[in-house]
Image (cartoon, rainbow, N blue to C red; front, side, top):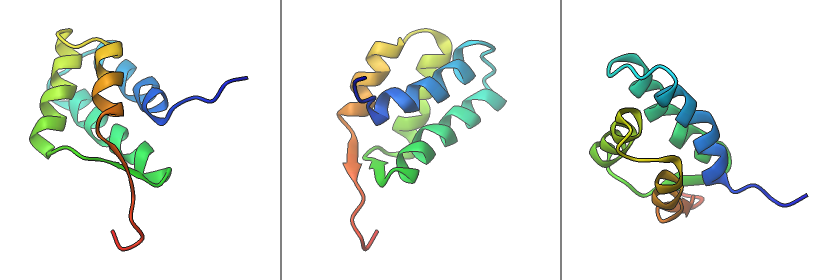
Length: 85
């Protein structure tokens, strides 16, 4: 069995929260927290501003960003945590 990327795991958790019942209020906050939390648990972080993360999650919820595009966005911003962070 192949390895699953952290980006894919993050999407698997955040995307349904945003797209199954998109709510600008509650679900966006959940997706906004889930995505970096999964990465953090695995010693990674997203190199993106809070505003960029929020707009990306909002685009996913609105349907203007698909899961493949989100995967590309996440992969381009995943960074290893440094021990002093």
